[in-house]
Length: 259
Image (cartoon, rainbow, N blue to C red; front, side, top):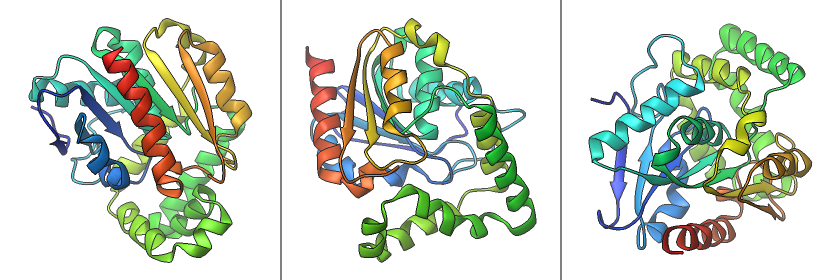
């Protein structure tokens, strides 16, 4: 039995699509997409361990363990294979799932995500852990949100940012730290050519966390990847540019699932 909270929306006979969220958020991050996608797919949202309504991770949680958590949800739902939409940390988990369970992976959408964590970035995360231990997650929320959106969007969207901050505050201490450790150990780049599933790589034109040039390297390493840059978007384009994100990803998933 899975320890992850999850939900399923849409016709159970429709092609299943699993949504995997960013660190320190939960499956409600996908609210702008769910109503549209669930009209044509069976949409499955999962709260990763220590996030949203899920229990804390047990033991050392590398990305493979998160992939196993996702598999447990699919097993409980009786879903043999699915497409995966992963954003940021969720995209890292989606890569891990595709590498460990290729036969259960129909298609991948990797949005605003990395495939290897370099030493300098690991050190940045070490600094965030130290700040978290000293001041808690609330102290990091303003700077995190500032990184995740363009200034124009942030200035015009105070209620959206307030809602997102509320999501972040639900993340447990162990959930946050375990996810950081998994991100620090991320090293999929040289294995991406093992993934044969159709893949869509999405990046924001103004994403400082995963710039377009870094995301393009991921696309070039994969066998069947399409690369898309969304204008006027930073790290959470599903919120900043919800319609174009919903339609771009939805069209890709339709093609991948129906040929």
